[in-house]
Length: 281
Length: 283
Ligand SMILES: Nc1ncnc2c1ncn2[C@@H]1O[C@H](COP(=O)(O)OP(=O)(O)OP(=O)(O)O)[C@@H](O)[C@H]1O
Ligand SMILES: Nc1ncnc2c1ncn2[C@@H]1O[C@H](COP(=O)(O)OP(=O)(O)OP(=O)(O)O)[C@@H](O)[C@H]1O
Ligand SMILES: [Mg+2]
Ligand SMILES: [Mg+2]
Image (cartoon, rainbow over all chains, first blue to last red; front, top):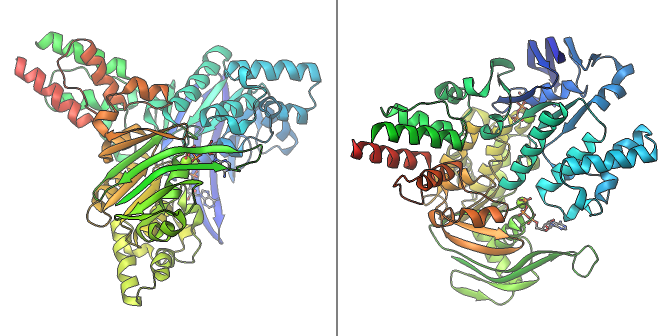
């Protein structure tokens, strides 16, 4: 069942009187429970799309429907934002309280959720992102990856059906990135939450079920990671890249070795290379 | 050459919110170095580079610049500011002039260069960061994110610092923008700036551009050496919130599975060379 639907979405920014056209008749359909990565060069329109999903921006023409709510319907804005959580690059800009659990409870207080229910939801959300042990900490004592997980917990506590993450790991160290990606995947697999992940890291995109590739406001690829990443030259022409695992087996093939291409992760590349050496040695 | 010895720094000292950011850090930057500075979030990288650039007085420690010892950092700071150009994180947020040209010219103007010299510097810096000439008269606010980033970097490059430090310059850039930037830094190195320090969370970027890596952990400098040596210590790096590049993990996995490959491979090119050689030699 479709949870996000853009129909003939057209949008432009006004900048100093001039019009900056971003989308013209864009169509996207995402099913409930999908984990979708959105890729594309700088300025291709990824963040502009994300901002349409919780009505930070609304279409100039066409329609965006999320969780059955038309995002242009102002009377349902509150309901929309409860169902669609947003996570941005900088964890410091998203944390408002001075104690971790208060930060997670912040959105709920605004919703008027009763105290006991609030306690239950905050504890549960912190456990899901594995930050329960830090509930009484001051956020500034946490690492970037930990802060980003607290920000995700604050969104989880609202029990959204969909979470949109706009480059959530851009400021994190490698292990912090892994933690956030692992958390996002688990939310998708175990809780069925629909995930829209915008990223410039190709090794994160391979973890999605589906990759949408944007180029100057248009969708130019929309397929499983296993179908798009082996197209190394096409990806490069779009200003993108492929994981090093994919690049390595592709490069060996290009040099004339008899190797199976298509690996997306380290383990896959290792397997293909071992198979090749077993066959050839 | 710059030598920092026993540098310590604490934010909000003496207050309940005090935070030790650097603990007894000693670091030497020699002419010709291209140093990758890595470390977990909050490990002290940004604090350290501001001290190197003469912009933040440490609580303790000394500095020497080109062999002259300064017992007080205050006296060293002036020398450091002359030699070091620092590109802050997300530097495009600090663009402010009405044209790209004026923004890049701002630093050289403060260096009191002649008009002609300033003009040469601006054009050369723009060329080096690969900004087309046509963009110089545009407003920096009308550019794409990647272009703005390059303008901001050009502003520091135009001052022709001996030591160029960039704090996470590839964060948020798309893969081709990131590749271009790394290529550009390699070209600047040696010829325009003697020494480059690149702060990054991307181990792949460090592997591609830097010659040596310095590793911060909890305010201490815990490793410093050739990139191949640092990336052969994967388990230690992981225990500090870091990692090795994916390609190194693949090669390590192949070695574990019994393939006789060399250790210390950290680029796709080198891995492909080494695997190809192995396969062809055995045929
Ligand atoms: N507030 C704004 N005013 C005017 N133009 C804008 C504004 N925000 C974005 N744009 C322009 O709209 C286009 C799409 O921008 P958007 O931020 O959606 O790209 P993106 O794919 O998220 O890029 P990045 O990878 O750099 O984050 C770009 O040409 C950009 O310059
Ligand atoms: N202005 C400040 N006031 C108080 N504490 C600060 C300030 N700036 C940094 N800190 C603290 O000092 C320590 C070192 O921070 P620093 O910014 O140097 O780390 P970093 O390695 O650059 O991290 P990142 O990878 O997240 O950019 C951290 O614990 C941080 O929370
Ligand atoms: Mg964006
Ligand atoms: Mg920093």
